[in-house]
Image (cartoon, rainbow over all chains, first blue to last red; front, top):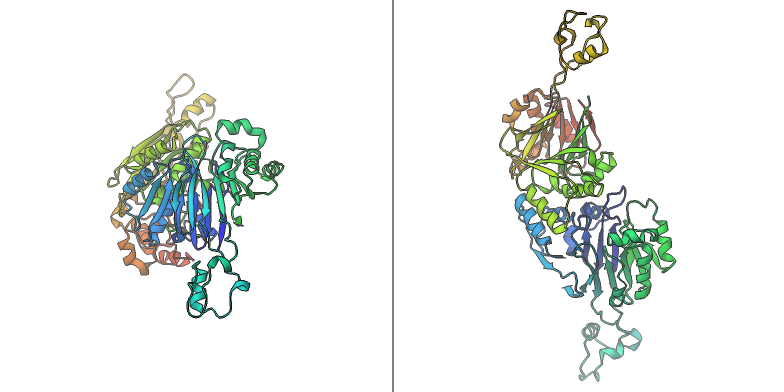
Length: 303
Length: 303
């Protein structure tokens, strides 16, 4: 089953030619989830062929404009495109109020339901769940309430191992086994336990999204061993003080967290517009954690 | 003195690759005015080197997202860039409420004052004035309250005509005449009337912006003889009924209005995303009014 992250925006708040504010799409199986939605996200979705009506849920980390000013336009476009499917929206309290005010002054009544979940940005709690995914908040430390999100795949069934399957099973029996059921004994055969003919269950994949935050090493245990960590890296280490003042992180701090948590891969993003070249950010992070990449527009990571 | 219009966006509400929602910059002398501010306008300003802190005023026609969803981000950017100069914002009632709600949930307190003027979208009234420009509303007929704007240059002084100036004037006397004053008689000369040594005053230039609207021939007298008319042209004439249903205009209707008002030039914009090629819209308009052009991204018109 697909478990894929696509980066739509790599920039921090100041608009930069060729960079876009934070937005990412996570695809799990056939379900799509949008993570943050900076201004212009719907054009990035057009560019990378992510169809708005395929989105099941949108997660907003915090209410700074570069993380949610694209939301109103995207909802309006879904409406124009005739969406009727409900949409889950998960974000800090106040987001619903902005949407309601906007809709009222615009005279817009959406064709579809927006099911809003107000999160507690200081908690580590499940805020969304469906048949393939469970999502928990990660308490960020930013200037305003801000949450990251930990996306965790639901346990998948183990695949059947051909070499362990007895001959002569009917298609119906095979289907039952494939669903994870045991076969009770009958006149033809003595019964068969699923566990005896299946391999080990695949380990659920996990993606941790660290939005705008101070360096928070205390969160490492919450994401220990995750397949992928995205962490903001607004500044080079030379600007560590500025990072602290503005409640942001340096590339090196992102890497320290990745190392402490023992994740498999690290992506850096949310780059300050002052950096024309991003290579120095990558280099500083790789000195601490080698499996690091830059989360630039269009990057796709398969887990 | 410069009187120039630059087009930043030509699209209607549905996002289209390579097109942007409505936004235009009018430059009069050294003053810049933004007309509508669809999502992504600040990136278009970057692209066309319009510096946000040079803007004196922003005019919003109505509160459909494709005409104002870029405003929040642009104000935030001006704040980040350290603007302290007050900014005039002119638009329908309710716009201030959206801004206040956004600012509150984002914890954003702008460095600069936004001086908001709530317009009456059914009136033809002066809503903005400075030393170079006077702006009146034009009552559009759309699904929600909507105004166009008529930008009219303040009368400029007539230039002095060298061949009419007597010899022997001092620099101070020339400066007084150039400012439009008469010279009283003195011991050296018998006095000089400004009108006797100056050419005719240049005709003030006028730009009419017709935002989303039904065909409104009754407005032609209000913009009679304007140098330039921008008129929305969402549809081809074959879709006249759809235009009426959605309170939009066809390219041909835009041209009929231009002809009735006797304007000098017509620009068409706000194109439906269904039209990959815009030539048929241009052709239909030119059949009625030949001096028509397409208001596509980057177009600059000097008046």
